[in-house]
Amino acid sequence: MKVYRFLSEEDTSAFCHKVTDALNKGWELYGTPTQTWDHKAGVMRCGQAVIKDAPGTYSPDVKLGEQ
Image 1 (cartoon, helix red, strand yellow):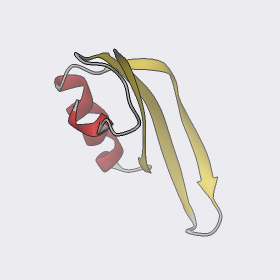
Image 2 (cartoon, rainbow, N blue to C red):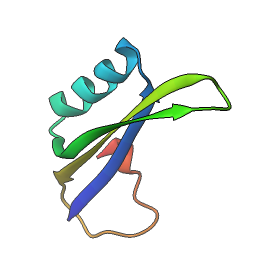
Image 3 (cartoon, helix red, strand yellow):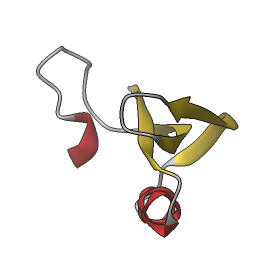
């Protein structure tokens, strides 16, 4: 099955670490990164979609972060 995740975080090194961790676990970048201003929190947020081929059959019970 192909699995999809959208990683997001404040625009700090924590976001880069989150994406780097996913890449080192076999995830691949999907599309371009995004940024948006979070008015409520007063911070910039980043996002990046990642995909991965994983064994098994998809169901809503699949824990995507554990793939």
